[in-house]
Amino acid sequence: MELRHFLQRIDISKLTHLQSLTALTAAGEEFQISHYEEIWKEFSGTVVNAYGVNETTVYNIVNSFESGAPFKNTLGQILSNTKKFVVNDRLQLLPRGAIGDLCLAGDCLARSYLNKPEITNQRFVANPFQTKEENRDGKFTHIYKTGDLVRYSADGELEYLGRNDFQVKILGLRIELGEIESVLVSYPIVKQCAIIAKYKEKLHHSKQAKYLIGYYVLAGMTVLESELNPFCTSIFLTIWFQQDFFALMASYP
Image (cartoon, rainbow, N blue to C red):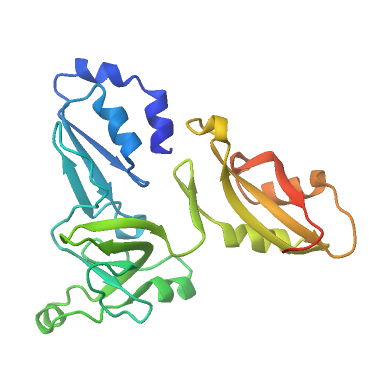
């Protein structure tokens, strides 16, 4: 579930009646100032922004905001038995201000993707920063390439900037746009396609605010949207799609 959707569904004012509730943890998507302001309207406890991915056991970096603290777009402090690295595409450490891929290492790492050796080898790689002591003890042997773009600010804080690929989140679920494109282009008369995530302007805070739309070019034939919809939704969750999901184009610009 997207955080904005969750905040819309609960009555924040009722949190003040829960005397034992002293902290709220937000995780699963980018923590924005709008989320922060919505929570602070009624809640006076600690708000924790928790960053992490499933491959590193849910979350690994936390930023705690005490009551009245100003919002900061930073990830916070790394948890114990975990290390973070900001690297370029050659796995070289980057200085402050340089944008790079966030990699994580530690006891939190999964071993692999089940029955997916190719993507496992791409994401779970040998740790080039492992010390001699860590090598001797068998610790921090691999790093996980999260695909999240970050940079260190001038004061050493880690800032989240987005993704380095075409992965998006809808209702808190990861969606690889390239996977959907590969399915759509496999349809016999679809020549080219591109899948894009968009927002419905007037429904920005609703359950269906973000949706997918597919642009496609045909190989000299015609096809009805009523044919393409069942073809895609038989493979992917129908909740991602709208009635106006497909848009036919004569060619790509």
